Amino acid sequence: MLIQNEIIPVGINAPDSTLRIHGKEIIRNSIFFDLEHYLYKEPIAIGVFGAATYSEEKRAIVSTQYMIENQRDARELLKMTRDYFIEKKKEGNEYIVTFSGNNDFLVINHLFKKYNIDYIFEEEFQLVDIQKEYEIKFKKNIGLKNLERLHNIERQGELISGMTLAKTFSKIVKDRSYFERMPKEKVMKILNYNEQDVVNLFNIMNRWEEVTMEDVMRMEEKLLAEKLEKLEMKRLLQEQLDNQQEEGVQIKDFLGDMG
Image 1 (cartoon, one colour):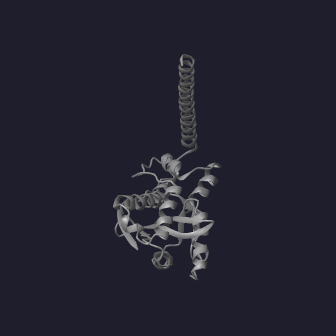
Image 2 (image 1 turned 180 degrees about the vertical axis):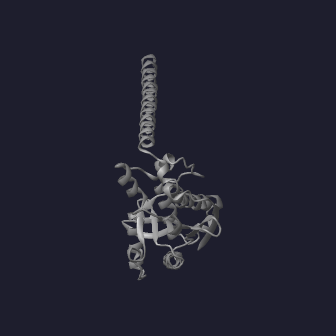
Image 3 (image 1 turned 120 degrees about the horizontal axis):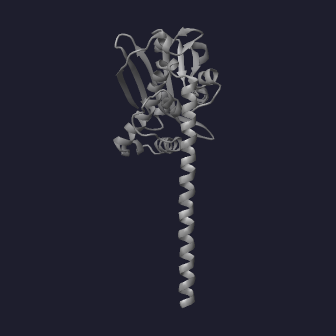
């Protein structure tokens, strides 16, 4: 099992700037949570567990990650996840903050049941889904990366597709020595991607009230313009390809006539 802990210095904005639930500031006693998992017809394993809390003493976000190195780690990671939440509740945390967290909870609850791990998140914490909070505030849907962009948050490191992560965790589960052969850069890229998801939940919550409907409308206009630009670029490339193919056919016909 690969375990990584990071301390990331950060300040908390004034209470009227952060996301509040029922008028209450919750950023100081929340757990920010995200999973990278592997499914095939049903949940198979959690590849990376990522979570973070804010430390008043350190004036920083303290992040924790567990990453499986083989199939045998799959059950141990689940136990460590349960123990993490038990400990964080003892420390006074009352909320779990996710982005579109239903999928993560479906996966982990399924695996808890599979491995006979008794833990019910809803009985221990209040669950806060930032995507749903955005929908309530602006009556619109949004993805995490665009929400980061809306809050002027620069993501560090490369994006990784869900398909790429799934293939990697599939190999780790099926091949006992695959993790040992993985380049360290690839492992760190996965961990960094997950950590960014977790830390940026905090950053979004910390800047929640800075975003207005005007900001949302401006970003939607930018996204539409970018989409139209990509479609036009795709059309031009296809047109160029078609012309090249047509020219190839004409040359072939010409050579045929000469032959």
